[in-house]
Image 1 (tube, rainbow, N blue to C red):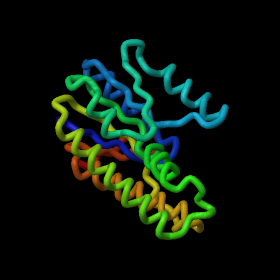
Image 2: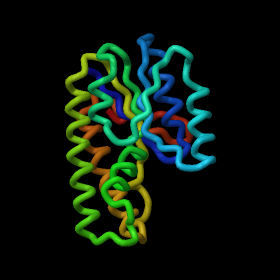
Image 3: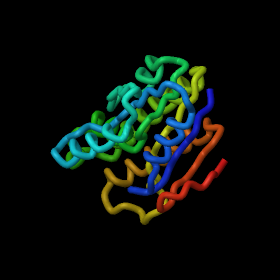
Image 4: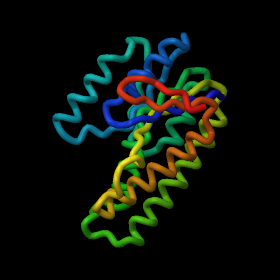
Length: 183
């Protein structure tokens, strides 16, 4: 398995870059989308992403069970996962559906559960014979967030990103549409 990790800030060009890598591979592509379109604006974003994908790509929408979706993907396809930032948010909200009523222990349990799921997903990727490209958001470069939910999200995503990046053969960060290879 060859894992390519792609990170960057919001609107940095991560998804477009990952999609270009997938197209250039010449392999069949399974696109694993993690977004939940919870409102009209998000639904429009999902449609724009779908419209960019070549007709022959298979799209699987799975907001929570990442390891299972990875395991179910055709083994020789290039698997494009977009994106870990949304997946982590989905997992945290599944565990802590009412953040305003949550205690620190609830958030810590949610982060631990997310990291367990992260380990499962990384193991599934390692078992795949086909290549994978994983897209995520970089959230650790800003200030410490004021709210507990935001801090725990940042922590969960940062640790998730570290696990995927450690397993990757190649890693890129995108800044203003420019990919910089990290490893």
